[in-house]
Amino acid sequence: MCPATNTLHVKDEDKAEILNKQYESVFTSIHVSENELQNFRDPLTGLSLANHVFTDDEILKVLAACKRSSACGPDGIPSCFLKDVRLSITRPLLLLFQLSLETGKLPNEWLSCHPL
Image (cartoon, rainbow, N blue to C red; front, side, top):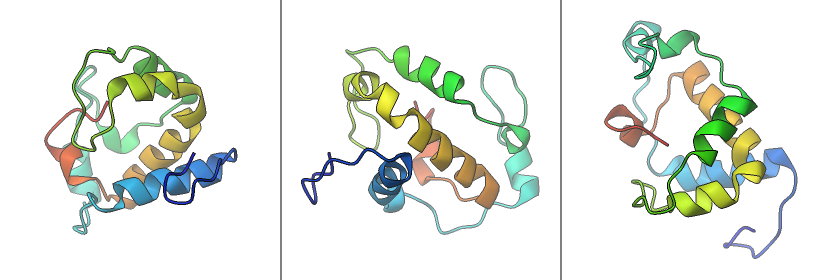
C-alpha cells in the first residue's frame, strides 16, 4: 500500500518505484567509481561488492532473519515490518540493490552501516 496515494500496488516494478522514492532523499549524488566500488567488501565473505550479483533467495534469507525487536534503521522502517512483508519486497529490493551497484550510486547510510 502506498501511503501517499492510498493505492495497493502488486507489480514488482511499481513496488520498486515506491521504494525508490522512499530512499531517494538519502541517496548520494556523488558518483562512486568502479575503483572505489572495489573497496566495498561484503562483511561476511570479504569479497568485492562490485562483482556481486544479488539473488531473490539471498535477500529473502536476510529479511527472514531480521529480529522483530531490532531498532529501526536510518530509513525509519522497523525490522518487523521488513520481515512481515519480505515476500512482497524481495524482488523490488533486488532491483534497487543491483541498480545501486550498476550505477555506483549508494545511499549515504550504506557507506557507514549494514543496510539490512
